[in-house]
Length: 379
Ligand SMILES: Cc1ncc(COP(=O)(O)O)c(C=O)c1O
Image 1 (cartoon, helix red, strand yellow):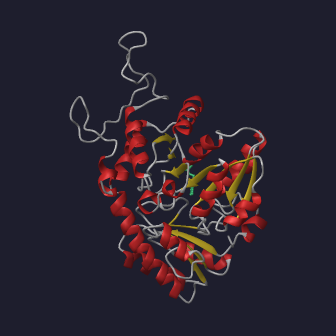
Image 2 (tube, rainbow, N blue to C red):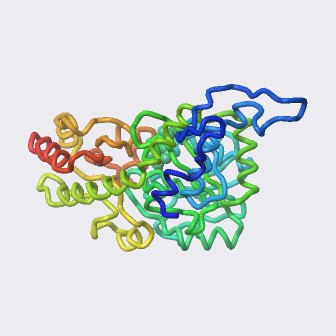
Image 3 (cartoon, helix red, strand yellow):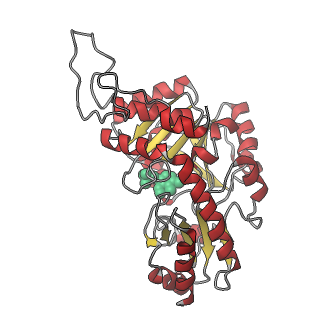
């Protein structure tokens, strides 16, 4: 079946009791058992919940995985993936990954004996050079947040497969509508469902999609042991959001292309980073990997003062962290999403004080452009 059909139907049978078309919100903490050891597959809601299960089956299908587990946030999903490792293991990471991921790796997991090396994953040679005997995982964010670097996943996938190293991809920015990393060698895919999958800025959640049964078993075990599960109501919200993922992503992409072009031609904008512009360093790779370019754009205003003037003067675009909602969100990575990255690392990665990130929503694109144009004139 096509993507839009799977998004609406995969994992979502009409309710067995009532025929309800929408999977019910099973707001329960436990399930009555007929007799000792005799139950319907559900014992306790940290371990299993039918609403969450329906969402997990849905996302697993969309990402071409074999199974999935949904978490209370993108960060708890990523944490649980890293708990597949042991003290002494080494991980190679995309160098300008989301600031919260960097903070988790450097300020939490390093204390438990994991070691991390950050490289430019657009070059598979850099990944190869960083390999150690103890390397057990490569963690890619595609594209990276906010500099939009696109990893050479096909070449990296060959390196990891040959050596039995797990390849993990954070696919939050593209969503499975545009990009399915498992088709390119990934073993695990993670998302902050807070973003495009839910799509309406009204839920925080995460998901891990597994390709291999042994990873699925371990992630499920760890999820139950640690307990950072997605609630039934949030599971239902994300499932509802995903029903319109295909149409939303098409509109994010159409609007994203137009806003990127407008910014690229604007005299007050020095540089635009968008995978769909031919000036993007990995434009050809983006065209090969993705079926669209989405709505995430980073651009350079030249200074903190210029960025501040723009952000102070937008009216339709909301100054806010997060991304992937129907409404256009605009943010300042240096002081917001990436404030936890040390300043020298931030500057080396190109996250300047003048950089602005925009998550282009699905409003009328002329209104988004008019808002940006007016705010850019205010400097
Ligand atoms: C690429 C990416 N991964 C993971 C996360 C973390 O997700 P959450 O905020 O749902 O914990 C974010 C949050 O912004 C993100 O942008």
